Length: 461
Image (cartoon, rainbow, N blue to C red; front, side, top):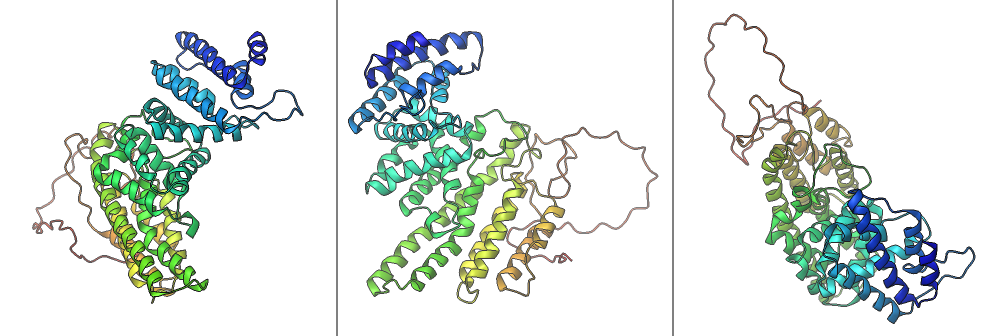
């Protein structure tokens, strides 16, 4: 590698970067013949940092910088390389070696260049780059994925008005990237503050994608080998948890935003008020459509989980993420006056209850009665606020009510729904010897499940 470095030092920045990609291609093509997942040695990594990310090797040396034209030409070189490389495995390993965070001073330059490269790939529809970026989002810690999502949102939602249409067109070109992009965006915008409410253009884009084909948000899950234990600190397999958070918290978050705007002394002229209410009304309709699509996807999941032999073993909506969501609803309800925000609180709780019940019934949320009881017990005293009373009632409704279990031929006989007993992936025990028969008891009438029908339940003490 030292000979290659000396030859690269005599070249200008662009030709040196192109030569580095050429040598990396040869290096990894030969490595892939010997090992399916070759490791990046120190030599190639140092060449990348010095000649592609412009990080000087010598300590104390001033950092090199490309001007805007040179940077654009470098992005074009990289786009063309990934477009012309026909072997997907080589593309993936080189993209990973280029942009996987290393925990050093080159990471900032690495992430900045990645954001510009993916943004260019969206603009000129370079599908190989988008596919590589989708795999990168799947295998990289979430903190870096959020940075990439923020860069794309800035470019296509904030920088140039109307450019969101360019981003919208990649739906048919790279659905895998769209799925991972949605997951990263829901991790970025968690509605915890007014600054973290998704822009209306971005919300409309995501709702249009999902409403057109709800299966879009399952692409990564359906096309990835999955273990029962998922790594911590990475993006989730699906954006379901983030989308449920959006739908549930949106009524309260927008009410809080409106309240803050009035308390800050912003002008409340009739024109400004009508415009704000119109925009918020459009957003609320979008969240309603999104909530419907999420419920439709949840209803699909039992069959997919069973096909992958993960039914009762893998919760795509982690229970550990439901607990903070309930706490956030409580906090938002306390911030807002329940008398002035009763409709918003009721809507948020309705969506939460619907999502919980459908998720538990389909196997997306592995939650026993005991866990749900503990979740209800974490709430403040019901006498404090109307919201707490309603939330307790809805959670108890989910706990105590009948859960409709659709028949599925692939389920093993005698499999108990996980809402009643913890899911266990163990074989059935040997049958006990039969006991003497008891006298027959009079049969009770069968109580059929009717969706939306009220039924008695015992409050949790």
